[in-house]
Image (cartoon, rainbow, N blue to C red; front, top):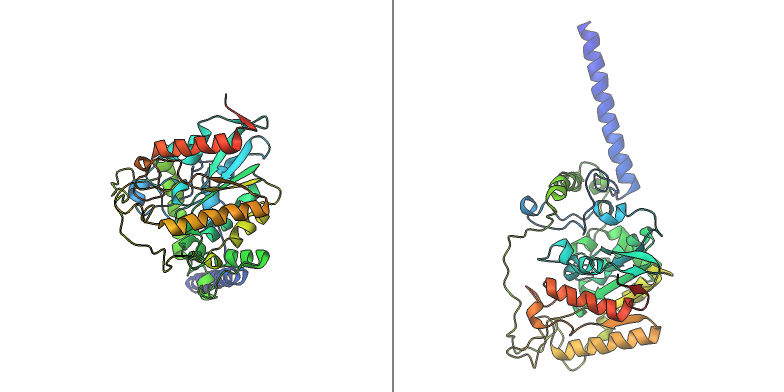
Length: 371
């Protein structure tokens, strides 16, 4: 009897090992796997913005690069049947995500607070911003967001997102090489993917994916604290205000005046975004920047931008919009410098309200009504 039990245990162990090996081989063969499921939007509310954070214990949030899991945790994934609302997606960087702001203080929160009725339906604005400056990252999110059949797309952007050399610097972009490759092929984009090594066979196995799996599990567990508190960012953090007194420096990245090298700016990603949106209206918005009135403000608008480079970018963006017949807004100077926080693009709650009102008055008022 003992020998038979030993043989049964040995067979069970061998079968378990073979099953585990087969599962690893299967996962490695099918390529990157994302988790488009979780506890959000059924057991706990969906998040008002994508998960992002470096202090999970205080923010009940963390950064991960599984785009499927990110969307599955977002309130957009639980929005219900398209057509029941006027659905607006807002793309962008950390200023749209809402650094140092509560969800209701962000641009999407301020627009939702207007309680607009658009085309006879209640308007709902969804925050798809994600920290890091990269048009490629925005385009990747836009393409995934089109699954939710929006009625309108708002794409705030700024010059710092345009240099070709920084498109893949966003960790979210760098960790989604398959998606970027598909974008490059489908829209004939000159994305330099050679610097990004696709995951090897071993890296696609379950064993090698322990960290992403653990991050996904932690995101689910933090969902209960998020549901109980509404906190998704460490609100105890202090910050150094963005510089108003600036260096006497004319450089923008490695470039010097007189001419901004427009051939090094990724304007073609805007065309790809227009194509990805299909028949859905898309509005490009040059977002507000801090316009300093301090030392050397005659040379630079702020830490990011010398005047010569930013002025040429604005002109080029306006010309591109006009040439293509795109709807574009320029809000660059619409928020006074006192309403910027720790960077030249991050707004406080008042600044976000001013930005939201600018968008309503210049893009939405014709088809949307306030109550």
